[in-house]
Image 1 (cartoon, rainbow, N blue to C red):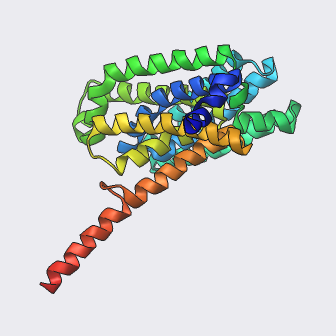
Image 2: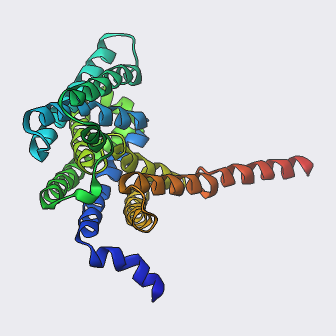
Image 3: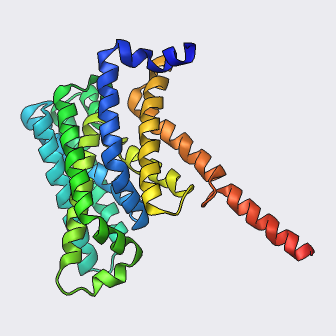
Length: 295
């Protein structure tokens, strides 16, 4: 009974904890599937690049309308799409790989965003944009994240087969003359940017990608089945949101970084113990090889 009381007490008695939990749950349900496909497409760091790329757009929205959810969200979405399109165009027109072009654009975007915020804002405003304010989430922010989660679910359901084919047999889609693969790629990156904008409202530009990528990477160490990986990554994201909020409440720690830190701990445990890519599996294989050589 004492354990149950500790697990549920903050969410039963404090409205701001309940709102933070609902927002994190919605964010986990929408971002972790996208992170799984980014992982399968070997684009894990692209999510990090795009999370930084939305900062100048959010900063412009802040300069024009203050801490307006709509203004910063629209600005961040446009900035993220611009960086994604420009990075793809540069990589197609030059010898640079896509990750190199993303790196160049996102570093410039991050510097520009910080500079724009410093023109009129304070260090508190800058910290709000970089690390979020999850415990200050209001009803409008929850509706915003919920709407994005719904759009993401419907879009992934429609594009699921194409995304799976591209993840496991990209050459098949590249020879398609209809341009359909490019449309899928553009829609997928738009969904990533949209979810990072939602995450930025809660966890900030520096932390939002953590909840998107760490649960899928951890899930990959436990299973090789894509449906199981998607389900497990979502479960890990929900669990880390709950555990991170509890940890921050009882230890008086910042909530956003604590949630990502909880996901990092699950990631490290998965790397150590996971049967489908963890260190334990590698040690078992080496032990078998040594035993065979002795025989």
